Image (tube, rainbow, N blue to C red):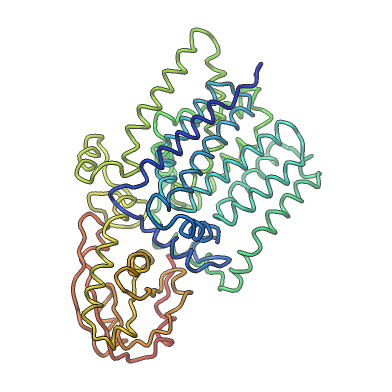
Amino acid sequence: MQTDRPSLMIPTVLAVSTTLFHLLTANDTYGIFRDELYYVANGQHLGFGYVDHPPLIGWISWLTTSLFGDSLLSLRLFPALAAGVTVLLVCLTARQMGGGRSAQLLAGLATALAPVYVATFGILSMNAFDVMWWAAAVLILTQLLRTGDPRWWIAFGLVAGIGLETKISMLFLGFGIVIGLVLTRDWKQFASRWIWLGGAVAGLMFLPYLLWQATHEWATLEFMRRAAQFKNLPLSPLEFLTAQIMQMNPIVAPLALAALLFFFLLPQGQRYRALGWAGVVIFVVMVLQRTKPYYYAPALTVLLPAGSVATELLTRRPLLRWLRPAYMIAIVVTGLALAPMAKPVLPVETFVAYQAALGLGPSTDERKELGRLSQFFADRIGWPELAETVARVYSDLSPEEQAEACIFAQNYGQAGAIDFFGPELGLPAAISGHNSYWWWGHHDCSGRAVIIIGGDPEDHRRTFASVERATTYTCQDCMPYENDKPIWVCREPRIAIDEAWPRVRHYD
């Protein structure tokens, strides 16, 4: 189909523009996100794994704070770069599939402005890099299927291995492409030694995390089981599909249908059909597993370039070519209109009014009560104030108590806030039973003076003879379950902290 090789100008401009957008909006007025606090703490406890994810985000966090400090702009620098790289990779995938300039431009715009990506690349998160590695892996698979050169499996194994050290969802792509090759009866791939060598490379890179799991009671499996049972909001297949449409932008959703047309009906997409099956298989598996909707976001790096090439093919006739710029304009307009729903670029009061004007409301993919804001926004509010409230309680302790006081948090957001904002307030590091914080231990806490954020007072009294409510922490527009939290000062432990510590562990 392609008679010329388009230059890299369009992908490069789109990539740079996307990165600049995220950098210019990094310093939002809402503040640091709950998970960012946790990832910064990961960077202070480097290892080969964590309860809820592989180790790479901890090392990225450590590198970020070591080189640039812990400002919002610093923390969000690498995710912004990942956004630009992802757009570039998606454009190149469209090019490899035979797309010309319009296909590349369409794929890049759809990727840059998809609400799920605007949100994902706006914070320090393993998800930002996960999407980027998927995009790189998909480009490699496209090249492999286009050229028939099996040596590309080594490159795929390298990228998949890095991806597995970022987030284990890369397993979905590996499973999907294997099933896709089986369904397309591409047996020569399995007969080649290169696919097995590529798999061995990925497995070898994944091994340190597996060894960490084996020495930590396979904590992630328990975390996943408990999250599915108690935390994640269960969705029907239709609800999951609807969430995908909203995440990619309803105007962009036809590109997903066009991708299926490209893979399964158009002759130009036949050689890439295994990728099409991979996208379908991954969707079905995630529906069956009742995962969070955004887990499917990396698979858009398969659908968006293929759908863009199909759109270009279907509008080749001169009478239809006007549809291309019209569709791109619609994507830009709606993408920019939806951006404030994915990234907190508007003040709270303005955002609430804007949300209502669009006929939308707050949302969450967890079993949590909401206030005026979606969880993704509300989880940025109130963390400095929490640390300041705890610091006032800490300052009221006697010098002797301050010397050995411990601060116990119910979850990694609270603990991360104490660890992030606490040093300037003179606070000791937090301890918690939540996820990896439990494995980081209780810091030899004596238990003679423990400041506890929230929790059940009756439970506290079973552990301490003296339980005093020092104050109450309040926050406006934070997650409701974080509001009106009593701050307790507990003394005279009834049992040793080593004995109590196993009981406070919880993974979710």
